[in-house]
Image 1 (cartoon, rainbow, N blue to C red):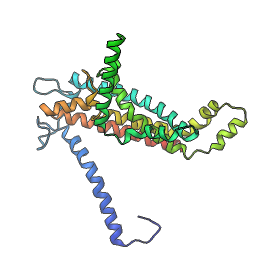
Image 2 (image 1 turned 135 degrees about the vertical axis):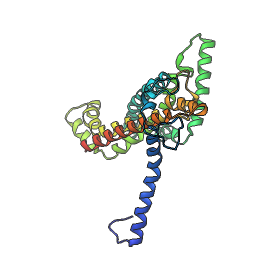
Image 3 (image 1 turned 120 degrees about the horizontal axis):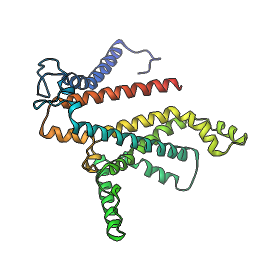
Image 4 (image 1 turned 135 degrees about the horizontal axis):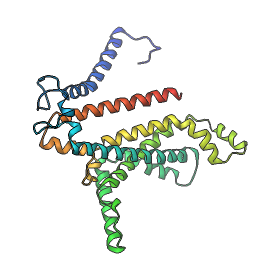
Length: 284
């Protein structure tokens, strides 16, 4: 809707109804799972039986709360470690790639850019299977021919990080590149004219300008890693990430502890998103 142009009352009313229904559609599942996390029943769904904090703190034979479940807490810790490491690597590599593609010209640039954005169009399932097969082959070849047994090539923590990094770096690159398009290259030229090196001009001029986008890229990569399932399921080892653990639990036993975990994730994402928005406003 172009606000500068006159619109009929019916159009304005329809637009508001559409936006309202859209956000209701998005929020109702989140609100429902958050409320049911405090439901005093062993059922994961309605009816409502009363308020309780058992699914967060209780430790008994009948009920096991989130903070008393060692396996669940371990999967959360694994996800946090994986997400932080993946987001850090993705942000660093994505920022370098954005600078490379936006600020430099080199041979086969378009071909390299195509490969850089390829993970966006490859389904996560295919990506996970491909990485697993490739790493298994390379690891087997190294072990058979050179006697080198590297843990990174087997299903486990490092392979999950590598698999998620394959698409996380792409998103980080695109976010930073979008910000870099607004950068005035004459600022770097001025720094170079004052006898700064190319690296110094990037570090002291370009990087501070890109700071909001870099922080945003880290947050997005962290959240994508924390919630990723379709790629991770093929690469995980004996220590599952939280989405994989929740999937295995809901297949065999469903208790409101899953709602409690979902509530904590919604709370975490809300806090991180708020911090990200606040940081962007402060850096404008």
